[in-house]
Length: 160
Image (cartoon, rainbow, N blue to C red; front, side, top):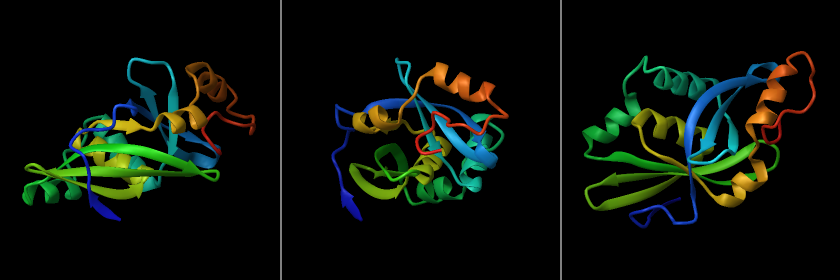
């Protein structure tokens, strides 16, 4: 589960920028991330607590939380998060890369957990290209899903 990793993200990963948390089908929170320098979006389902943490950070309502402050107190920090897999309908996998001095540690996590901690810490977020290809969508698809508020039809968010 834990292991040392290389100091930098792999060249093949795509950087994402957090855009917003939206609610879909029954109020399920979903983090919408946008490809940096691109047009593709990725929607990652979140738990209620992950959504609250991310929304507060995006609004700049709150400072670093307990996990980030604990890492800092121990001389570490969140360096980056990566969404590295998707399986089934809603199961995105991810990991965090934590650093302390010259040492880096990869910690496996659910994608929502990894996103919440990276966004809270101001760290970059990356995605494996095959995940973005399989689960990504366009702004037009997101707009169309938003305009169908009363229609329970499909949304562009993977598996939702």
